[in-house]
Image (tube, rainbow, N blue to C red; front, side, top):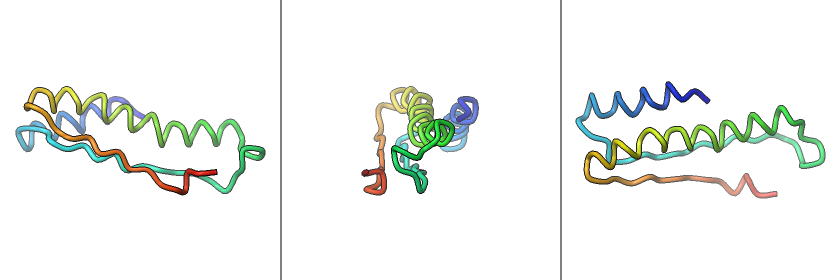
Length: 83
């Protein structure tokens, strides 16, 4: 996850459209593992993709939304994440 990319996305949106009203976090990766077989490296990759990127996008978009008078953050998940 790259914080500078998330920040640039939020800045680009406001520069291009004048405001940021909606953030739709739709991310999800996994793998063919079980808790018993997953490696720490694979686990960390899943956490980074599924949680860290969502946090970074939200972190940089929320202030832009507040500056514009509000907005909506939509978080999408999947049943595929169930064990």
